[in-house]
Length: 140
Image (cartoon, rainbow, N blue to C red; front, side, top):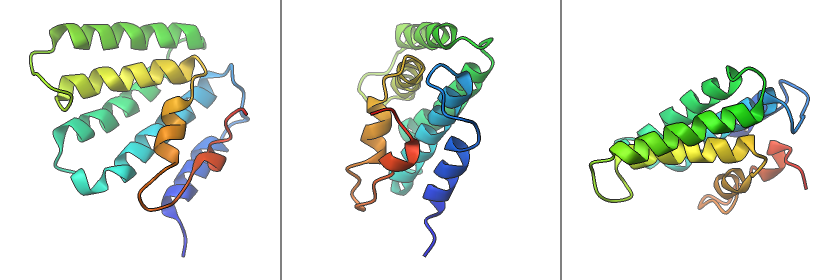
């Protein structure tokens, strides 16, 4: 049986040569993170916080790609967005949409800076037993 998620991850990651200093690599990894979040929480499609996290990761990938070629500039954009979103948060609790939006941009900033902890977290230790870490082509 074909693993559709693995195929989607592979097509994103292998689209460009892996270069830890490239916005194209960061873009692909943030897109993959969005896919992993969506797949991991597929049973929670009505959960607004999960939906916002996934969609904001998609937005974060676009912001990264249009950052002018600098990963540090992209990370700075994400840091500012996360801070702005956290500043206007009116809801309480971890599950609010604004908290999820801020988290997405913090995650994207981390990817831009070469911190792949969130990618590893969402790619491995899954309840279904699948592990996508190898497909991500992350540095050792």
